[in-house]
Length: 433
Ligand SMILES: *[C@@H]1O[C@H](CO)[C@@H](O)[C@H](O)[C@H]1NC(C)=O
Ligand SMILES: *[C@@H]1O[C@H](CO)[C@@H](O)[C@H](O)[C@H]1NC(C)=O
Ligand SMILES: [Zn+2]
Image (cartoon, rainbow, N blue to C red; front, side, top):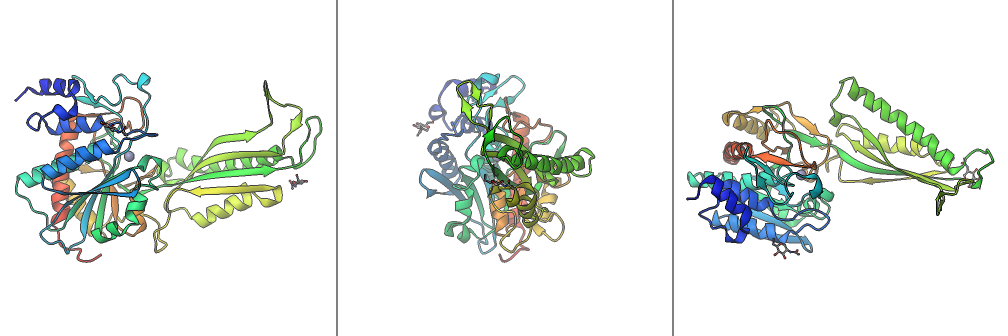
């Protein structure tokens, strides 16, 4: 056996294919997985899918790859339970990552360098390649102890989460393949915690792209007249800014966390007629538009928001039009807010909570995620889903430069999943879906 230092050295120097099974450890498998170039805009899915498939097969899990969209594979692993008539447990993660700017990193973002403190640096170390490998390492350990789940456990690896999931989880969840899994409960990605309490997320905010456009009479820049396009747009910008302030005030006063207000952020303003040196300054343009990133918490009323946008943000009387691109659902198929119950009404929650305690962990107050994950697609079907990535005492570095995860945190997470997976897969209270 090589020393740990030597194996890290080897793992950095030699390519993944030459690392033999004997040298591989949970950490080196994590590093190998981190080295696949899965960043948008050109994520390589074939290499990580074949890597995960070979691990799964070595563990005796059934591995199937589906292409609901060409070249965007979904890998599905299955560990059949002793009582497969029970609704199954699904452990989900995404294969892709956001891009990284290598020049701003202290180590190359796809090298998975482990420094002398045991920090493993890589794009995806927290979001969310850690859980992808932790699921498998936990299953490896459970199988090693002869544990047999009662309900069937599925592990899914989906593409395209970072660009909205339309060609990934959304298609998977809508498929007959998914329907036949009879999923009773889902664990998906969460976020790091800066203290020693694990964070757990029971809902996501829903992102809306809101574009407002104004038209108006063009005219000479010297004339003052009503209802020019830019003038009309600016009136709306003021109305929207006041709404933004009202939400921000709630946040600043500490009356609600960031994930529970409607966030509104201006992202672009477009007006004017370009000239070789900038803009034509003596002409008032006939069109102007602005784009906003709006995030709706599950408790917000989408109809009320649409009405507000139509009547106040882009009123037709002011020659305004608007477009709302809703990225994913905000209500489930029965019309209820997309939230997973975190009380005794949800037996999966109680079992999950007990498993964290049994693992020696502390659970923070359940939170709404300020951003979005693929869990919303499962929640839309009414399937309870929690966002959970077991990372305590870790700075939140997803999408940031120098994203890292400490080896000790990664390894501890495997033990947490052993408790969580064994508990959730063996209780028999939920009989039908
Ligand atoms: C994906 O990565 C693997 C090795 O990591 C490489 O062999 C393959 O050519 C890549 N595929 C594409 C389409 O770039
Ligand atoms: C709407 O646009 C038309 C055409 O540019 C203009 O004549 C009219 O004054 C505008 N009305 C308002 C309310 O902005
Ligand atoms: Zn993620």
